[in-house]
Image (cartoon, rainbow over all chains, first blue to last red; front, side, top):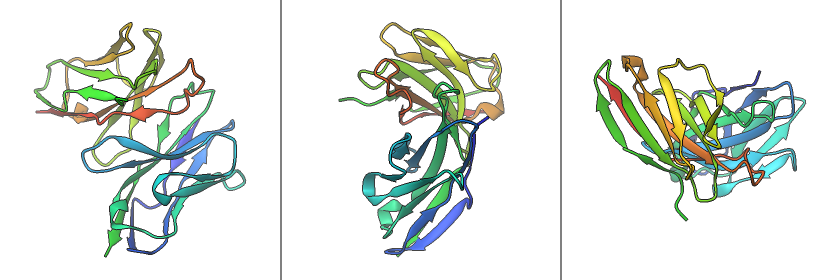
Length: 114
Length: 115
């Protein structure tokens, strides 16, 4: 079975500070991993994805994530937070065994302090 | 290029009623998945449709049913509504035939409130 754990349901950072959102996954086969962002009253927007190519993945809006198999992690980072980054972030996993069914974490709410 | 669209945006129903939600996939996509997102939670997979058939199903009761049309659009039907069905319902589309089925594009969702 596949699952995702997001450590920290709420994260606060100062504007300009490093953003680090944690995601650990569980999968018995090689996973596909995703980060999505959700702004209030909107759907999910794909930030980046890992599909077994480069382990360091760069996404939109300056975000990146590194796949670490030994740690079963896929943490999301951004060097310098902007006010517009305040949103809910979801990590998700899927595999070929699950036929592209996505399993989402419970989300991390990011607050950016001016 | 229109993305994934959903209708209606908001819906209010009472317990015991039935509801139908609609989704049009992104142009070029042939697979539609439905998710339920309760307040403060991550999306939960309901089911997935491809070639007008339900291909996979999550842990949801039979009150949840769906349909996919020849133009790839889809409907989600929920019967005998319960208060606990109140949630944001998200539709996601992907392309199985192009081999990019592992990337899903989400619509803005339909907010269902059951009173």
